[in-house]
Image (cartoon, rainbow, N blue to C red; front, side, top):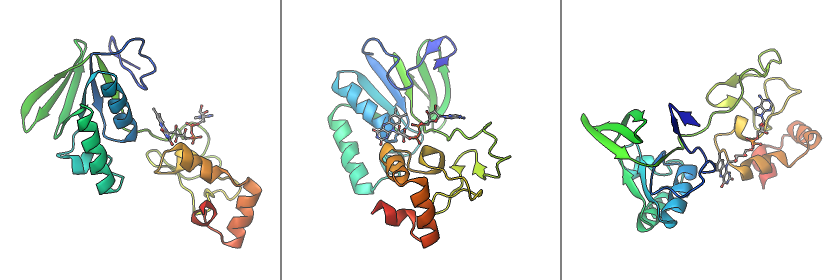
Length: 195
Ligand SMILES: Cc1cc2nc3c(=O)[nH]c(=O)nc-3n(C[C@H](O)[C@H](O)[C@H](O)COP(=O)(O)OP(=O)(O)OC[C@H]3O[C@@H](n4cnc5c(N)ncnc54)[C@H](O)[C@@H]3O)c2cc1C
């Protein structure tokens, strides 16, 4: 990913040498796992969050006790957190410009990792023509049986779930289309076949 003339690391895979300083925008599992990994390798890592505290910004979809435990573990590994930020701009001198309560706050870094979530890639596939309902942000609309609004089309994985993980996609995709179809007709829901 390129921001102006500044190459940004999207997955860490673009990096050829260890950064001294790294900023991570986003407090979800991907941002935090890479924050921790780089911190453990010796990079000074700061996680930048718009939320006012860890309760709102660190793993907000997870159980609060687990999120607190992970937050403390990350801090013990040397990861720093900055809360309550409003993001203004990223400059080519490798600084992230924010405000907090009206005051300017600037974070220098060698590498910026943006881990603010992913959107399903549903545009331009002809879903409208196929009668498949979708939302640009939440993806394809499915029922409990992963059926879309076109009864002959099913969806699975990141394109139709709020839980964008491999294991969710895998579990949901394990039953064959035929089996899923039979389950749908027999009234067996997705929750049931996951068991
Ligand atoms: C950095 C990172 C770390 C992650 N770490 C974990 C982890 O530790 N554990 C975990 O469980 N999950 C993790 N995930 C999430 C995991 O990768 C996804 O949940 C999983 O890959 C979803 O599988 P999928 O088949 O739905 O989508 P994808 O794996 O994204 O596959 C989608 C496929 O569809 C193709 N495609 C997209 N659009 C079109 C189109 N218009 N036309 C045709 N083909 C198209 C793509 O090229 C791709 O081949 C991570 C994700 C990222 C980005």
